[in-house]
Structure formats: structure tokens, C-alpha cells
Amino acid sequence: MLPGDKTSKNPSSSEGEIIGACRFGKPHEGYEGFEIGYWLGQPFWGQGHAADACHALIDHIFNTTNAQSIWVSCRVTNLRSRRVIEKCGFQFRESGMSHSVALGGMSPVERFVLDRQIWESLKAWGRADA
Amino acid sequence: MHNAHIPDHTASAIDTGHVDITTDRLRLQPLKHEHKEAAVALLAEKDIAKCLANMPSPYSEADFDEFIQIVHAEDNKDLVLAITNWQDGAFLGVVSLQATQSPDVVELGYWLGKPYWGIGIMKEATMALIDQHFAVSEKSMIRAGYFTDNPASGNVLRFLGFRDINEQKVYSLARKMEVDHRDMELTREAYLGTEQKPDAGRQRDLARSTSYSMNY
Image (tube, rainbow over all chains, first blue to last red; front, side, top):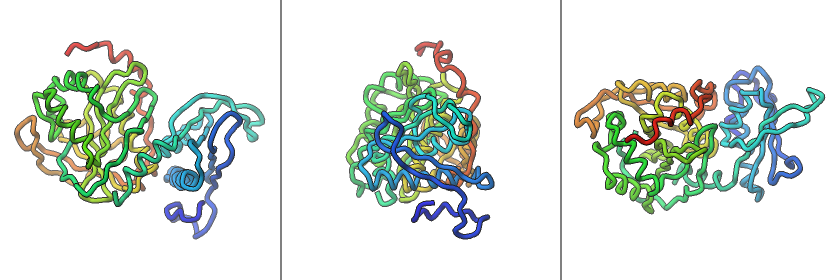
């Protein structure tokens, strides 16, 4: 979890225990900005932790880089992950194929994008002191 | 829903013109003058204003002009979005998040043209807006409410994870009387932990529901 992400601690886990991970890096070839990814240990599913962590990651990327867009993808069959992505404000952009190490081959994915302009508009609008 | 609030005139202008949210069937963008004709036509159906506290009925073009003037005013702090069919651009209704006197709290409001009731449009629109809101905004509480004789609106709020907090009488401008009203609230924490299962209606083809054409 990211430093400064105060809300991602799980009360059922001991302090500082790793419950999952998220990362950002270069997007697939042909895409601009950054791509994020995440996973969460199964005992910690369904409590909003993945969305919470990704919110912090997205803020970090837009606050510390000049990226204009952030990409994320999930397997078409992974509806839970799709909801995490939607809850982070991403919008569906396209369907495609992606290599899965776990599956040992290509699998159909959906790709989603979050544009800086929308993030900035809503950030300014939603400031607690605004 | 369109409940009155006291505007905070210390607010600075906030540019929400870039807000553009697309869902499976819908597009949410700032409400504009160009939506007037369609909005007035849909609001000729008086059942809509009866579900709302502050919607005039009958609804005139002047009412729309007045509302849009407030929305576009320099000191406006409300996010008021037109719901359109992203395929053909048809105007379907409005969804809004309005500032309140409490800096941490916004109020959700919405209305939908009657031909589009019952096919999950409002669940889809509100879910997309609240997704965006809680992803980005620091305001961690959303309030909403509905007249208890309009259970469809309550179903939307419960689907999103809102919980009951209070019941009271609220004056309805359209009905010219006080009506039983249920107040509800949703925290960011509760929302993130709630699994909103895609509504069955979300799979339906919006084009089929528009076969009514514009009979109003």
C-alpha cells in the first residue's frame, strides 16, 4: 500500500501486514501516460480496499507526473475487478487481448482510461474547503 | 432531489466543463441551454415534478432558463449533468451533486423522463457519477432523499448503498403540500465496500425503450 494511504488498513489484519499490492508503470506499446495494476489477497476482497488503494495511486500519479491519462485493464470475466476500475473513475475504452502469465497465453481483456482533465475538474470541485 | 440549499457566496468559480462520463448506455455532461427543448418536453409529464421537492409544475422554458442561470453562475458549486443516450445524443434526464452548507457533504439529486423509467437508467447514471465523485473528491458523504410514495427512487438509493437516516415531511412545490420524505446517506467508506451488481436493465437496449419517439 502507498505511504500516506491511511484508509487501506484492514482491521482484521495485523498492523503493517501486506494484504495486496498495486503498481504503476509504462503502458502497453501505443498507449500514452501510465498503466496501473493491482491485486488483493482473497480474504480482503469485497471491502473496498482495492479501490481505496487505487484512488491513492491515481492521485499520486497525477500529482507527481504530467501524465495526461492512466490506463488499466482487466479480464472480461473478472466483474469484481471491473467494479474496482469503475469505482476509480475509469471509463471503458476498448476490448483487446492481453498476455496472461498465469493462463500461459492470450486472454480477452477490457481496457479503461482515466483522463487528467476529468480528474482535475472533479478534484477542484470536490475539495473539502472549496 | 433538487432540495433547496443555501448557496455559499464565498465560493470561487469551479470549471466542471470537462466532466464527461460514459457508461454502457449513457453519457453524462454538464447541463446546457441546448437541452432546454427536450427537458421542457419531458417535464410536461407532471408525475416527474410530483417526485421532487423544488420542481415547478407546470414547467416552462423560463423555469429552465432560471435554473441554468444558477447552474452557470460564477459562484455555482453544483455539478449538474445532463443524462443522454450516448448513441444518439437523446436527452433523458438530469443527475446532480449539489454543495451543502457542510463542506464534507454533497447532495444527490436526479430526475428522468418518464419514457425511460424502469430500465435501470438512473441506477447506471447515479452509479457512474458517484464512482467518479468518490474516486476523486474529498467530500466523503452524500445525502439524498425521496418521497416515500415513489419507491422506485428509494430502490435506486438502496442499490447504491444509501441507508435510511430520517423521515420527515417535506414540502413539494408541484403538489403544494407536505409529503412523507425519507432522508438517506452514503459514506465513501460504505460505498467502496458495497458491491453494486449491474442491474438487469443495464443489459437492455436503450434504443428499444425510445420507440415512444417524442409524443409529448
